[in-house]
Image 1: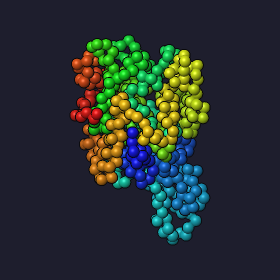
Image 2: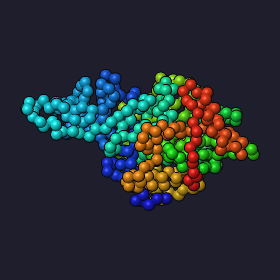
Image 3: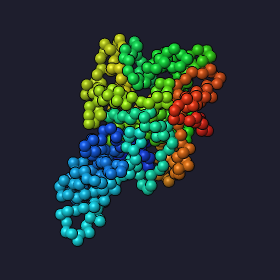
Image 4: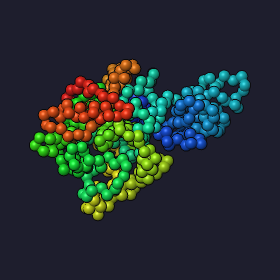
Length: 445
């Protein structure tokens, strides 16, 4: 359990907070390209308790304060012009850098507009997500992570609203033992759908991943420090000689990378809206085949309401809980979408989990390691020191690759090398990915 002071430190992300300063020093997802209106690509967004407006420029995207510096009206309703947004109230025009470039009601000779500049943040589009940098100084270069370097046609991006603090969502993603229970099916999932995370058969086992992890519910968990954050192993003994190896990653500070079937992986960020709500953003990439974006988008949109991407199953309707379903079909009784299972788990803790009263066990090693890393990084950043996964040069960015994420089986005595061999086999067979070398790591118990 944590002291209240530490719980506040790792959950509060508003302007000027220690965590907020750290998160702002990294590129953060701001919106999906697909959610921007086609005829008028302007949208009000809220990130880390800042209200902003995102809009399409002639080249790229602009992200500026939502409120006009003149009289405070809402610029998200403004007129989108060639390279800026014009306030409806008095016609002040703002460019993508937040500069006021026209004040039509002021005298021709006035220099007043040169004094006006509102909050503004640079944006970069990567594989269906518009990222923004909200920190001080120049933004860091983007690492060569797979989610960024994969060709666009091999990727799919989406997001969802969860009504709880960002850290609850992230900690669910780096917890390897929960999948044995939360995502268990009493009977087989009756659906035949494209892109089901636990539906593929693990090579060499004859079993779907959902059944395999459900039967082997006590994994050995090991955690290693890595340049990108943490690498997490969940080891399940299948026979006397063979174990299942599941490798996942914390992508510091607020993302994780997990395998999705035999050829797919996804990276998922958890980005604060404010301290009690957040969006998860995902880039899913396939090493073998191009993605069917239309099918995936339709499947995802069927489960949410727009424009907020709030799941149709939510706290207001008890996440669709059905006791008969819980008895006969799913462990949760909350439908077949495992995203809803995760959503319930983290939302049911309350808006901000009280970590002063929790009791962590051996199976929580990754969660404990992440909290220690986060607290150290907050202090390091405040002192001007470098933090994980934060390159300061293009060479450092190019060295940040992967991270490697894998589901496979191995003989007991060679699992540490076999999963890397299997990963490189997958990459060598890929139309776009090359072999990656595992960096030097140290155990972080």
